[in-house]
Length: 269
Ligand code: SF4
Image 1 (cartoon, rainbow, N blue to C red):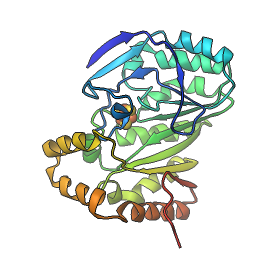
Image 2: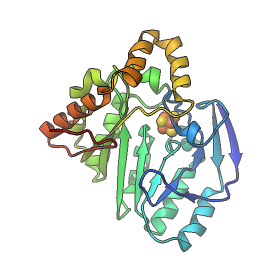
Image 3: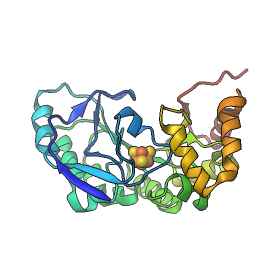
């Protein structure tokens, strides 16, 4: 893993995900999920998952920006994972959280890391906070193919439980729906969410950016070639594939009493 310390000119950026602001304390991500859209969004040429740029000065820049900005929700980890292992050493995210807390900005976090539990003391002091943890499968072997260096499934479920036990509002993100992977254990996924007492489930389908299919294809060729054809079929030859899965998820959520939000709204009779 190549770690590079860099200086950032700004901290808060525009968010394309519905937040008022986005904050990404690192550029790059050790977790290296093969479906990650961040390298396309950032137009990153380096190999995703093999480098992390550490924005060492970003807490100082953030403090200056927070003094001038209108209060609004800050989405943390929109094109990186702010709680990836490098955070243990550099604590850039922790120092950003301290600034956000000082100015009492509402925050919304998304992560695949159980390192988040280290910051419970800080989270509990925010007036408004929610934390989303992603799960795309309940199968650890599949998880290792698609999210090779992210926390294990069990560690993520435990993180959701712990956050809820400490009064933090949480949501499970099922996304992207991975064809013939996510749909294999939807019942278990929703059940795990219910046991962990998450307040909402958010769902999104696999959406291909320019380089995504190439990266998925390369990884699947090496680790699970049998999935290439089913992936192709779901993406290009089965117009209702994702809608059908989303309808199943909506029904399971309804049965479990968990509100469900879809990025794409299927039409249901
Ligand atoms: S954790 Fe998020 S940012 Fe990191 S590689 Fe996976 S999808 Fe991309």
